Image 1 (cartoon, helix red, strand yellow):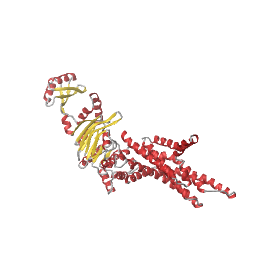
Image 2 (cartoon, one colour):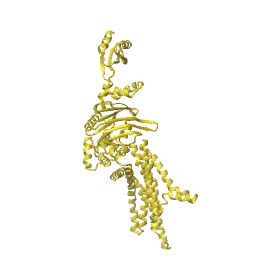
Image 3 (cartoon, helix red, strand yellow):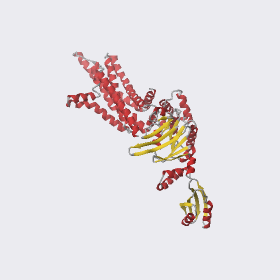
Image 4 (cartoon, rainbow over the protein chains, first blue to last red):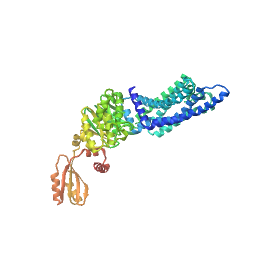
Length: 253
Length: 324
């Protein structure tokens, strides 16, 4: 465990000592600000109309849920850039020799790197609580669905990061790692598109595979173990494949 | 103690290391010598547990590197060919990090400070590793290998990229460390071996071609005695005369400059032909400018072991350049 913490610290050090973390958080906040403002204006406009013609309005379902849902798109573009360096950079600079000849297990290295990347994302998300806080100041949305939505975001991020790390472990070249990761992410994003043209069984499989489909319930405030298990097993698979890839790299030399 | 038994490593059809065995006792410095691409780095990577061997066995301080990797790694310090530094960390942070993953628990800061002092990097403690000069990087790499006080040190070309003063200091440091550590160091600089090592393993194309002490190696290859003669006279005639001296195995022209020609003469062992050669030259009426026996240096042994006849000349040229 101490080793995991040491690796995590080192990863955070790499993010926060270089411009990576600041550039990423900065642009994330700009994008999030936009993703947040647009539905907010829309929501405000709608509620003004409702004043004359009352109907059901729900801030959680109509504003916060969609905003956080849209936020997942940012992951798609940002995460390949976070994960591309996890292994590729170590391989290129030779520091992988230090890690692999130290008395620590591969699993500890992988977990350390994974937690480091996840903490970077959590730091990004934490700043969006300001936006949510503003809503609480002027209104009184339900807090529980917000918590589940954030939980969903973190779980989904874990999946992307685990997968991205696996791809990074396959190559020395960071650009190749980023491109391949982006392509795979995008594929998983849109894999359910073709489900409407396929038979019911295939449809169910494709929808199950899609990372985003599983997020919907979290945004609605539902914690369904089905989705939690999906995300956790996806993460475990990604980390397992990374471990196998690092190990096989050893044998191949 | 390091023990390597019948170690082989294959990359697909290519054999990088072929049935290598050697042993370094506690407190000993073993020099691993060979041209580039001979399999030195691969062997060291296997000993340090970076990669498994295809065949054979390596033991570090009594622990098999494959079966008990954590125990073996805990007792091994490794300086790879390129020092494994993180450019965004300061030297101190970096060493603290390495100490943590190497399992140093108690008095971490004291340990870091002691190692920085030992490897003369204390003055750059707060500089970023990426901004260091090659010499400092190399020494931080050495510091990193020493941080957990390992029993065994594996150093891949520890003096590469250092300036002459640093090279001398580093060799001095390595010799000092030898008492308490077992050291394997690789190099292609020959004087380094004769100056620092108690045992030499010469490796070429993945195979061990010789294992001995530097002195014994020099002794062993003293089978034929070599002589160097510089004569002022017609090269062909002199050569013919030299060949005619009984006891001369081989005589060859090394270099001609105007009238003056340098010859190498191989003679049978245990005969001193200096008088005969001198007499023959004088009898011919030529000028004898220089005559001396040549001790086969480690360098010559190395070349004779690792090169075939046709390559020798190219390598000689390279050697001259390297020496300059």
